[in-house]
Length: 333
Ligand code: COA
Picture (tube, rainbow, N blue to C red):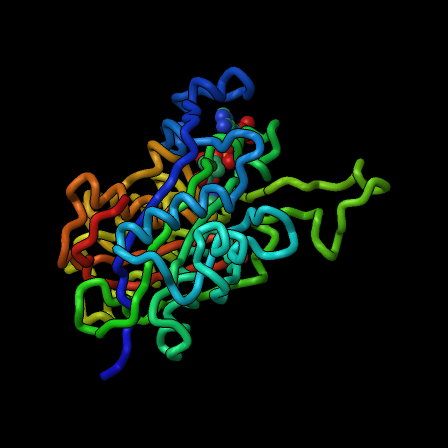
């Protein structure tokens, strides 16, 4: 019998401080009307100074372990663009703080597609027999990398973390992940980027005046690419699962922008109601976006056991991906 990765636990964590669109108007030349009509976002959560990606990841991880009813896992994979520090990776620290012992633990960097990439890496560990259970976490504190004066990015992103537990199981059981479709196109690397602070342009006192340590995004190009890639990979994984596109009960897409979610649904000719919306209350939480949206869909009673579910994401890199599963019986914390 083939081994399949099976989703068996889901946990999330948002930093408590909620920042409304109104709150942002005190610092930026923007308005609630502009933000809502262009993005669909109303509120985002922002980590307090001193709270790092690992802090959010540990909370979400603890909750996912509780949801799965386990205390130990065989590996930890953490998706993030905002590690606690450039070196070492954040995952080993998270594993240690969760009391998981000396398990393999590593970070995955695929920007907003990170959670799907991390899930696929974890699935590979299970398929190889290297692990029977893996904790996969998406955690990001984008508020730390945004230019405080840049209204085009500050209004979009929020901080948060979400995690799932995968276990070795069988391909036909609820929660079994189908083969993911992942892709990248590095010719678009400059569309979403932080120019300074890496090996090409290290941050040094002598170049501080010309350096740009902040996250920059070409919103329009990202928008078009995101719609096409998420729609195309979603169609592909549905087909591989043996479903017609219209059979998809929930297309849970990376929560970048309400107009993107609507455009993906339109491209697939799916009713908008089948694309759950969570970004109105959290903004774009990057690697945390998919597990946060899943938990919200379960808690609101929309996503139910047995439902045909497709997860899809798009992010800097450029990167994108999708994967299909029948939703399992789990209680998120
Ligand atoms: N408040 C008010 N005005 C704003 C603003 C804000 N927060 N941000 C930008 N604007 C202004 C711009 O300066 C521009 O003004 P101008 O016409 O005088 O130059 C105008 O609004 C239109 O800007 P534009 O960038 O064309 O808007 P848009 O409709 O493309 O929306 C995004 C901008 C960023 C919301 C949109 O492109 C988007 O969501 N893209 C995808 C981004 C994304 O999801 N990235 C993550 C992928 S992982």
